[in-house]
Length: 334
Image (cartoon, rainbow, N blue to C red; front, side, top):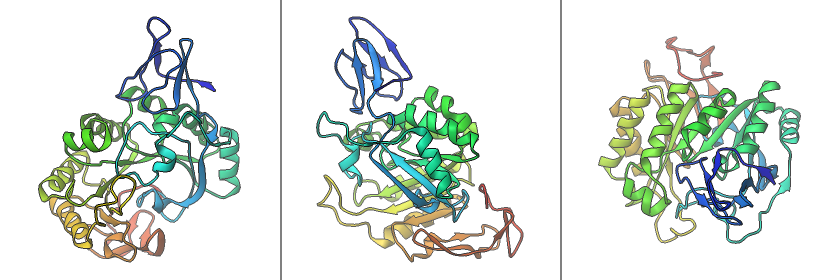
């Protein structure tokens, strides 16, 4: 166990967690909503510090990050637990705790950094479940990684406190945030959270200078209406026209096995809405071979990164410029 950050002691050995917007008040010997932060005699502990449930070497495109060191590898880690309860979660077996036991293998921050370097990765990604709930582990790892010139990436639901984001900001280089819907009702019923807090974190990430890409999983009948997609696109445009938006294909999972996969035409419609709104880079995801996977120059409209799934087939960006018309392409490490 490792003492948690961002909590305050109240009375009768109760504590109030400040890591995420839930602000859980946790009685002695109880856990917060995430299931991995426990109050023991008035001290809040992280039960997953250094306990990796999953780790792998992934192409950066899997995060997905298309404008951050494309073609590089990222050492990706996760622990058990999550602070949302999405009915469509694809990693529910490790994100949604079914009992008291915390599974995982001992993998210290030092070992994570060492393995990332040995593997030739340019970054460490805190991903698969929700990095916010293993914040202390990610925080210590990110500080060590930065000393060894490794980048740090959060793949996150964005359900974190502003204080925690500001704390890790000096070490955080990029993030992909899952903007699940533009409806408070959807967030409440499907995810167990509140949209407004995610929007605040997205704005703060931009303000802090973290490279940001946004993903929306399009679930048939739940968040794929033209009106909602337009609202999402307009908000991302407010963040900056250079902010990439990934519209991804849903496949039946967890508690939503009764819904069909997202039709490809829905992905194409969402992508066109994003482009028509004024976004420079809108991508289709979970649809290998679709032309929406490619990066197109916003000026000359030619394909400048050609992808198939997570793999790059051709790259026509040179020193951050379009090879054809010399337009500056937004991103880091292009």
